[in-house]
Image 1 (cartoon, rainbow, N blue to C red):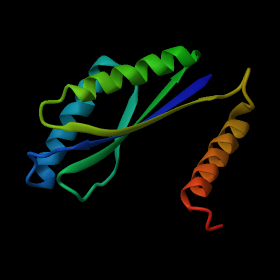
Image 2 (image 1 turned 90 degrees about the vertical axis):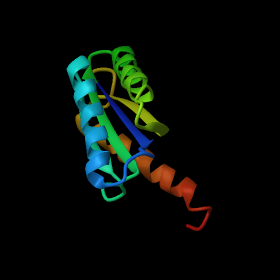
Image 3 (image 1 turned 180 degrees about the vertical axis):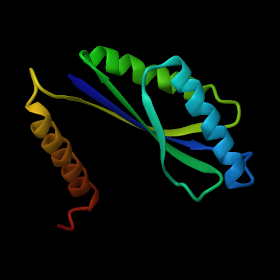
Length: 125
C-alpha cells in the first residue's frame, strides 16, 4: 500500500475577506473531489484572506497511481481563475509489503520531518 501526501499553497489576490477566500477554496475542493478519489482539506493559513494551504491524501496499491492522482490535483489547482499556485510539496510512503509496515512508515515519515528540521536550523543544534 502506498500513501501519497500533497501540500500546496495558493494566493487568492481578489479575496477581500475570509468569506471570499473560503468560496474559492470550497469551489476548488468540490471540483477536485468530484473528479478524483482523494481526500482534501484546508490545513493552514486559515485566518489570512489572501492565502490558503491545502493538504491532499491518496491511498493506492501503486506509487505510480498516487503520483498521477497528485499530478491531476495540481493540474486542476493550477487552472483556477481566482487563485495562483505558489508552492507545493509531495511525498509517497510505502506501507506493508515492500515497505516497513504501518508503524515503520509512520516512523520513517517522522524521521524525515526531523531531518528537514535539522536542515532548516542552520547548524544551530
